Length: 376
Image (tube, rainbow, N blue to C red):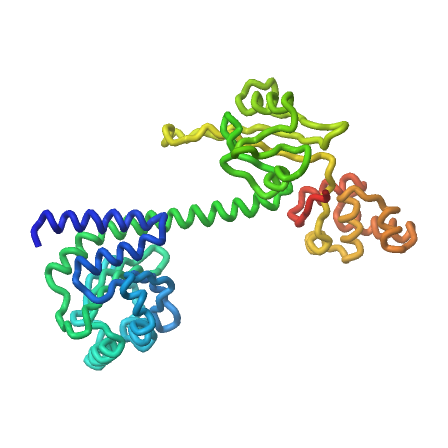
């Protein structure tokens, strides 16, 4: 092929490769491009992990033709019977461009098994590009010729894989970083959803860009903030204007209260997002609104309190009741016990938690990691 054709095809492959970083569905398109360019029967990308004495595929993406014939191909090629997965588990090189016919890890018996086994599942000999990842996993891009094509990897094939290698390495780094950030964001989201505090990230025009579970529940409640066309809206015009002034920095405080008397009270604090000096042009002008309903009680899980403070389940139930705003007498009535007995339980709870008063006990529970739910 001429140099211009090669460069054009490489541009298509590289574009598809980087496009797959945040769109996993594009891996199939990438495999299709490589299959067409290389003139092979099958192209697959695999993430291999060591498992006892084997290297096993943790993740696989194939071209669309191979997807349709996956059951046949996998019947042997993607099984532990394939000697490829039994290669020595010593640390592989950072970059490995090799083939079934060249690989020094195979014995003569292995090569016969490869030839016979691949032929049975409709595939010819393979060649590949492997990249060792930082966490010990290995990424492999593997090509199989058609069943009756016994050629080894040629100079053209090896040249293309050599050109692809640095792009694959960079794409894998970016995808690993993106995946890590997505996992971290997921953990932060879980933590935010468990904080019993409504949080909303909005811009200066009150357009919502993110919200946690408590905020979304608040939007559905009457006489609270609502979402209209993805924008925050207060129930009355005066509150809406005050809220807009708060997020735009025109309010004389960073906190404000809404509602009260005839409507549920809502307390709001505005925290402007920090700019990113290294990416000033990409920084959104966002404000984090932290919102609480001071009129609502919190119900803590007694099992958590029992574990955290060394309480019996009865003592933990009393502590949870007090933290939710109940009294000792309320607990005694609910449990059908004498109030004196309930106060003996309280005395033991105070001793075990190292607190001297009921109010101090409640503060300590509120500052713990015990699971809690807002009582509507």
